[in-house]
Amino acid sequence: MAGSSNTKTEPSRVLAVSFYYPPANNPRAVQVSRLLEHVNLSTMLICGDDYATDDRIDRAGTLLADDLPHQILRVPFTQPAWKKVSARIANQFHIRLWDKTPDRYRDWKPAVLRALNEHLSGYRPDIIVTFGSPMSDHLIGRELQQKYGVPWIAHFSDPWIENPFKNYSWLSRTVNLSLERDVVEAADRLVYTSSESVDLVMDKYSDRVRQKARVLSHAFDPHLFDSPDMNGRAPIVIRYLGDMYGQRTPAPLFRALESVGQTTPELLQGLQIEFVGSIADFNLSDLGFDELPPGLVTFRPTVPYLESLALMSSADGLLVIDAPATTSVFLPSKLIDYLGAARPVFGITPPGTAANLIQELGGWVADPSQPAAVDSGLQSFVAYLHQRRKALGEPWGDPIVRSRFKADSVACAFEKIVAELV
Image (tube, rainbow, N blue to C red):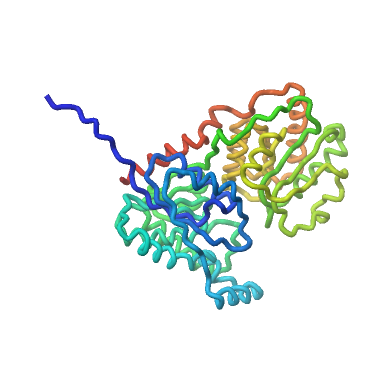
């Protein structure tokens, strides 16, 4: 009779590349560190070190990330002085090609390959995973696939060519389309954060390429959220956490607040709306801010990540505001953190990924291009918050929906993708 085996299977060795990683205080850094923290994989991570001066730094986030059960090789990013000068001149004359093919971090690739040869010459992974953006990470992945001859997963936080925030010229779009095609043709799996992103990106590729696509959402860690005492507190606070830029502006909310103030002013009594993050260079007066009651809307700068979670948890309600579009394929990472805070959500967002999720949760949604819908949604949302304050309710949001986005669940889904190839 054959004896049973108690041999333990060793976790797969993963070589991961993500330029953004704590202490960088941006959504991509946070999401990559969260995923790697919770997967049962033996990870060697290559990430950036010397960040550009406009990158926000969060040292508390570094302490969390450095305590994870994987090895980290930090590789500095530098650019030749002549290229920095040339990029400034090109930007001045709107000839932005070098820093958009695919981005300014393309020069990081030689440094990564040198670091691997110098510090990890004997290392052999079972699989390679690259996280974009920046999309330059995927160009590194192509090199590593050829170097090691192992499967490669390319993970996209956002679409590459179809990203409306990139403002490609015809030339930079042509170059990036060629780069994207090389990556998606070569990678063994293509991971996107929503099914809408898969449909949008894969529409221009063959069925063979589409069959490699998988959906993996962002995740939240329930252990990082507090449950503050809301009893007796005033005022009622609604918060938006994140940056405003491009066509993503607070104008639809300002218009709705002005309308509500004229029709049902009692809803604005005891209400405070707070924006936390960068507002770019918007002229708030042009967006309608001056028409609002003084003190109703306030602004504060970006805060460290853990503080942002505390602000979510202590709010009565939370806002998602997206740029107008026919359909939005973006899954904002802050929306997933909102799920962890378990506070009611109002999304001023087009039909698509974010709107579908908010509706699944039981929240409020209005298309930013439809002022009447935004007015109605805001009225209903604020009225609910007034009533909820009286009841001091339980954590908000469909618990089954929220559970799908917990870090352990998302990590398990990623492990299954890895298992398809190893």
